[in-house]
Amino acid sequence: MTYRIPKAGSLKKTNHQQVMRLFGLIGYPLGHSFSQQYFSEKFMREGITDAQYELFPIPVIGDLEQVLREQPALCGLNVTIPYKELVLPYLHELDETARAVGAVNCIRIRDGRLTGFNTDVYGFEQSLRNSLGPVVPSSQALILGTGGASKAVAFVLRKMGIGYRFVSRKADAESGWLNYDDLRELNWSEYHLVVNTTPLGTYPKTDGCPDLPFEKLSAQHLVFDLVYNPPQTVLLRHASEQNARVQNGLEMLQLQAEKAWDIWQQ
Image: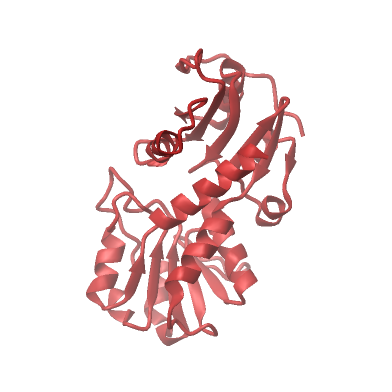
């Protein structure tokens, strides 16, 4: 695929005159993101002096074309909410995993060509395996949300042989999606893993929380929240109060970021 002709806009240019390689993050909004801090600290720690990482908060996905036009030093991008699926038509090709997932969170830019990858898969799988512990492998999972991140989570669960059901604000009988009201009648002894892929609870709206029947949780459950800012969301606090084990998304962020860096060096 080829991306379309850039639209006019007023995105702020990055001062990269002294930078040979530019990397960044697209999404909207980006006030919650730790990505720039993570990569800036990585560059300093590892003595990488020819790279810079910037945030590109684009209100619409079409503004990606302007970013590409105004930032010729760009070598790679991370992609976050809400563009992990919407970015697909702007890419020339996808790697095998990204194609299977149907969502992209990493773009390599090489000779004007954009290749999409999904490093969320790697980050989530490694972090989940670190967190699972005694969770019964044969039990099922509930995936909260149906956006781009949920697709990576579902891909990993299939790979690991863990059954799952999606939970959305609206039930869908054809697809088997549950809504949050359905969870009150669910047999929670069959679902020992809950993964939140929604942005609920993310900074600055930290009081947000998926509407779960928390009294159904126990020490047999693991609640994995992909949100990492704040480190303890309302969801994780309520789950902890029921003695459930909890995991936030910070380790996943770090793992997928390192995977993205490896891809950008290829």
